[in-house]
Length: 519
Image (tube, rainbow, N blue to C red):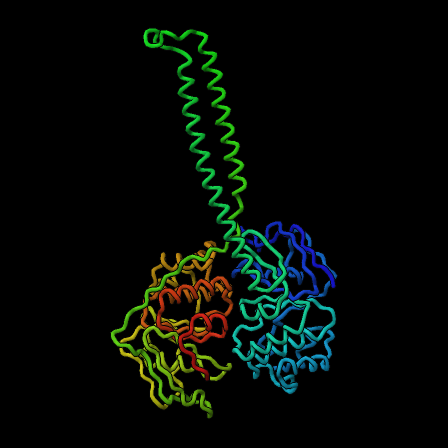
């Protein structure tokens, strides 16, 4: 057990005007199972890299702990090697037998260590890396989003595995994973950093309670300030009016007034002015007590979507549908049956590689969008036609589909050019990105420099401002922060668009799905 002490930490990337961390201090314990929470771009991965000593910074980070980071870097040439060949470059001095001892808890066979890394699925790669990560002694482990791109089954295995471990920081946007695996939270708020005992749900409950209290206190202070300002203005007017009567008066109308009256008026004015000063002091005190009350409130801006209404009830139907890629002998999808009617939110679930994205490709091609150059569907121009299908696939004619691809590699250029290419309202796009908490400074940067979470937010914003009959989202939430997920949940519940979604976030599925199909 050891402490990691962070004192007066300040850090900004070279060339950036804004600090990621600004004079922050906190302490964490290396015996904890620590969940790291914060919006996209707040600095979670940056902090892990600071612990690893990758960047220079101002302030101090002191610890006797040895850090190790997940995921390990795998280059293109590394893909041709086996995990057994790679693991010593990942973790110096690692022993193969200790890695093998970890594998049963991750539900994978030791034989996978001797296959080319390129032949392994995302889930298998992540599990092997985790086995290597936890095969050392007394390391404090930095685990950065271990469940991205993984199906529900693989997520469940990793969740149960991490539940049995301790001594790590877990960066994740999966609420189910965080609730199951952590006993402390490290939270990057809007203006501060806090450390708290508990899991995500207990922290969120405490935060909502604290935010509500802060809002009530803020309203109370605003009301008191308003009252004091009115009283101060009234007293000031009285004092000024009284002061004006000191010199000059009408001897006929004010026949009972004498020169000595000036002293009395002056004393009365002075008393009123003292009262004004007292009001101003109280106003300043109220303002001072009010300052900072709302600085960390995680306000979720209202999003909007304008789904189109189709003239028929049924939009999509598959009956005994199968799909086979031309260069593969095995069927990618076999005997699938489902339909989507207006208002349905159908979730396709299943293991990685079971054909979820293949079904989406077939639907898009059948809808006539595979070679489309329309503004709405340019981001599906890469849909391949190199497959054959059997059974029935019916898509309503002239249907407009808004599609989010799980791949972000096609995103290039600046936001203005992007909006022009896809014929999106540029102002509306920026407005929606701000509501999804993308900083204004990002608007001037090229999209290639965005984090994966920021790129995903761009795709989601583009889809939301597209008025469509059917919204098809393929794993939209990889890298998206928890608060934005909750924001989008609220939007979908309110506007009830018709949707076909592939997503492995258990909480999101529970909140949103009206239908589920398991492949």
